[in-house]
Every structure is written in C-alpha cells, then in structure tokens.
Length: 105
Image 1 (cartoon, one colour):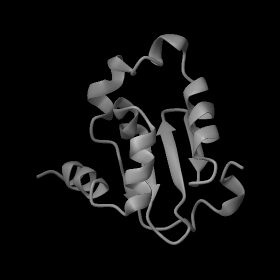
Image 2 (cartoon, helix red, strand yellow; image 1 turned 180 degrees about the horizontal axis):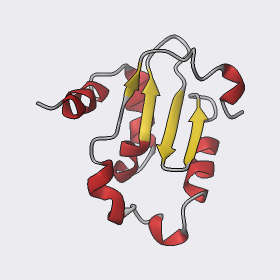
Image 3 (tube, helix red, strand yellow; image 1 turned 180 degrees about the vertical axis):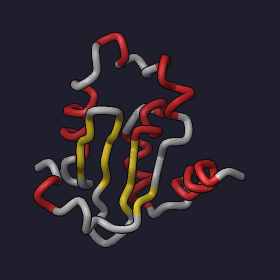
Image 4 (cartoon, helix red, strand yellow; image 1 turned 90 degrees about the vertical axis):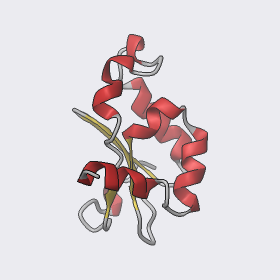
C-alpha cells in the first residue's frame, strides 16, 4: 500500500467529526477535504490556488465559499480532476501552523 493510500484509509478511521462532515458533502468532494485531528478540529478544503479553513460550526459557509471559487462547469463534480483528487485527503498532525486567525468565521 502506498503512503497516499495509507493516509486515505486513515481518513475513514477518523473520529465522528470527520464522518459527520463527510455525510454533509457530495461524495466527489470528500477528496478535497483535509482534516486536522486534534482538539481544535479545524479542517481545510483545498485545491490548487484556493483553500478554505473551517470548523464544525461554520462548515456550510466554508463549503459554499470554497465551491464558489470554481468555474460553474466544475461544480457538477469536478470530473476532469477526479483521478487527480482520488487520494488527496490528508490528515495533518496539529493546528499550530495554521493559527486560529486563518479560520474562516
């Protein structure tokens, strides 16, 4: 198993926070999701040139902001990027490097 596959598999073993978020968004977009697993439980939607940080409280607003950054033709599932994004869900060890000032409120 590659390191990417190993990390991707860990996402499905993550706490309830991740599973709850995963249920709220279309399956094709879960691959944009980076979850930081610590007490702060801050996550990040990410793609080249655009990142949106969120917590459980502002998830919906952050998701809308993230999706509005894509051209309309991509919003149907980002099919042209499906293969590229297949294994890009990462778990990062802490939120120290992000800082609370960057979390969208």
